[in-house]
Length: 464
Image (cartoon, one colour):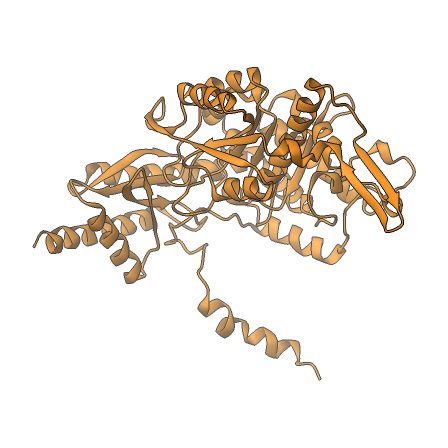
């Protein structure tokens, strides 16, 4: 016999709340923000209550059409180029993926299909997209755009600070990956790939018989919030027929997590992020990070016809009349079924408005600026790289990696605040990310004092 709901609910504090890491605590400064708002929670509740499985338009018309509208709303609010919009005359498509990892993997597979097709055409090998050979044992299917004999020639590019999902995606797609060395400099005084490094890699790989087919560029690495210069790298990739996918997230190799910075395009002062977007083939942002939208919600934009060409599978039981009149989102993801994620986007965009979302983002940045100023005035601590948006990277002045590791350990063992550390090119530092919507300027000041006092202790103890 089942237990009464009251008893189950009373166990939540003891079993769940008391033993969880609370990402929305005002003293949580680790990893990245994870969005939350009453409006978004209501969207998820209704999604669960409606309980549709939106694999195509017929299975849930409102789910499909609202997602089309919401991704168009987002694209317009972010001022993305016209070709990103899902319109009658355009090739653009917006889809809300569950995570940036999924979006990256789909971009890799789509780019792989395009590269295989181009190689086959250049070699005069033109055949059907799908060939089926029937014999006494069943049917043997051959997928022309995913030809394993050609895939072995392909090589993907990313920076040496790219997210772990890039490496996993390329690995699962059975191809090579070249991690391009980043160099500190540029307009952000941070770590990014240069045009010279990209040109040299392309020349080397082509000389070795390899075909570069995709560059997963990062706007905001996890470790230091470095940004690959799309406006400098884009023309090279376009010339070389290399697919450009933008992972608009903090992404790093020491700690594997993301924080969408694409959302900051909502603010005019951050629109410089989109310089060079006319060159890109796909773009992804995590709305469930910087915006007040609950996990999971990771919009992906760009050329829907390309992805449809390489991903479509059409069994009879999924066909219906007027199938070409609307988007069938099953073609743009690995899974067949999907949740009604656009509800929470609809609620948040309508209730907050663009001005409300801009206020939310600017508060995050202002709090980080406040912490940055305290570090700049400190005699024991220094910035590792300049602050970017809501993240500040710092370390002890004139110190060893061991001293900074000890500082990080003492801060977290104390348990009043929570940070994580990272490393770039062998240099260890601490990350301070403004995460909670509950964090105030007073919380920032108290966090700084805790860090400063532990910095004094580490400096004293490790000099002995």
